[in-house]
Length: 257
View (tube, rainbow, N blue to C red):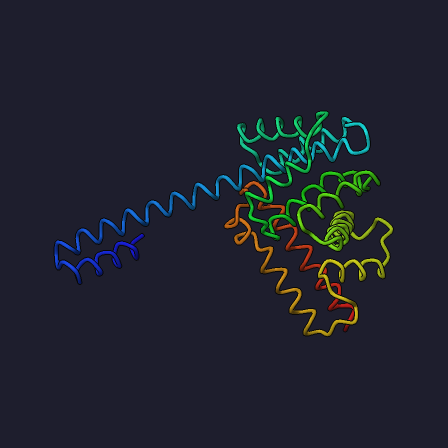
């Protein structure tokens, strides 16, 4: 704001000396205030749509196999707590979840609205898909019907099929970590998953590996995602994703030593 006032005042002074300076400073202030309100309003709109679409699509995902179980409802409620939603946000999320699992829910229209509001920002859409996968895989597995819907969602959001594999690999890494390395995942599977998480081929050079790692860490930095419209309540999930990216990089570096 100070910069806008300064520039406005400077231009005004060049045109009309002291009077021009005052007028220019006021104009600079008004322009700065208007832009700030517009940007803030746009960000809030993205956050609101992101939250509503997250739980609406989650409701549809839970019904993908034909029925919404009590366990799946519990997963959604657990996510309410994990995301530290305010009472108002919780009610919004519950209503959206109910809307998503209702007959006649238009999944394509919901995703189209999300795409429009987020302007197709890939990092945000990837996080959206990650939340959906985390919810349906909370029991450690993904039903075939749920997997098919995830593929449909990814395609409509303009994300490549490989994105599903990347997130699935990320989830396996997360569950393995929670189990302290247990869970029947072999070292070979961990390494293969690590390459999928970073989106590189095992034949990639060390330089290519580092470049892919740094790019992913930059794209998924919680502060950067927040600036693009990721709700503050989902920051923890963004941090978890960067941790999985870092873990994958460490696994590959260790294997290459």
